[in-house]
Length: 122
Image (tube, rainbow, N blue to C red; front, side):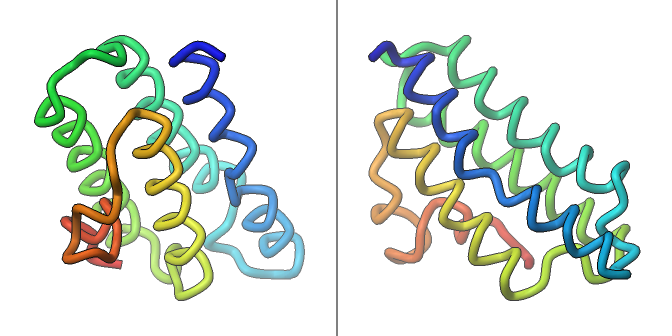
């Protein structure tokens, strides 16, 4: 499987269907617009990693993760209750899966808590 295919396959782990289900159960913070904004952050991260390619410097890849996490921090700040405990766990696992697909070891970041833990505020 190619580098791009491996990265794109991580989209199978997106938690956003659960978020949409939560909206349908009355949790307004998971509107279609808000879920799409979060999904776009991860889609963009994956596309940028693909563009960099598998042989890019680790620091370049890590900078993309930092940017994505910081955008999610801002999104969470602007939408009350967007990233709660369950969503945090799902997103952290997803970031780690994307990191592994990009050739990074997520255990080397966030004091072993994963790559998103380096910058996340959620």
